[in-house]
Amino acid sequence: MKVPSFITPNTLTVTRILLIPFGVYMLFYDGGTNTRFQLISYAIFFTLGMTDIVDGKWARQANRVTALGTFLDPIADKALIGAAMISLSILGRFPWWITVFILTREIGITVFRVLAIKDGVIPASKGGKIKTLMQNFGVGFFILPLPTWLDWFKYGFISIAIILTITTAYDYIRAWQRSRH
Image (cartoon, rainbow, N blue to C red; front, side):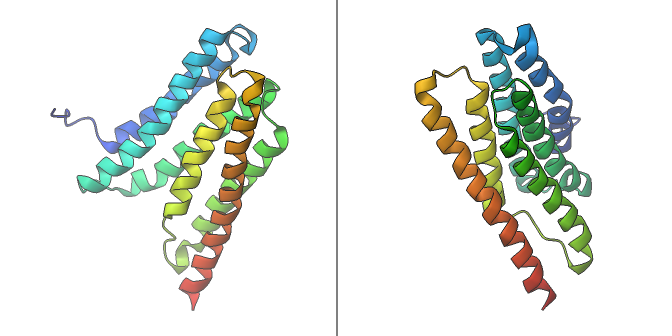
């Protein structure tokens, strides 16, 4: 299938950012307790999360990596996960401490990478990409109206995401330190 020329990896990234409010709206619809709208919200967030994989892979394979895409992609990732976690925390369905912890790390490492760019770009690591995927899945399970007997599952998934959040932050700092010597 030939993709129209006006659709680019950056188009997907911008579209991902623009569609986040629809996922949030569906999550809050009808007081946040309507199973149908929770499922719609999950479908939106899941699709947007998978689009992150598609746009990056497409950009690399088609040799369409741009400075704009390199800048916007991590912003879209943080906006997606941040919007979902903050919304779920407001609804009382996700612990605030996890939201604050993950967002503090995400913003902190993003600022760190921007400030460290004078020493050379610190590219996204494979661990960072896995961390983002695990965060998306972990938070996604909190969007789904799962029965309480599956709480172990969603807390287990988000625990793995928290561990990866910590270890990848450490990896970025170590990579920067090695690049300076």
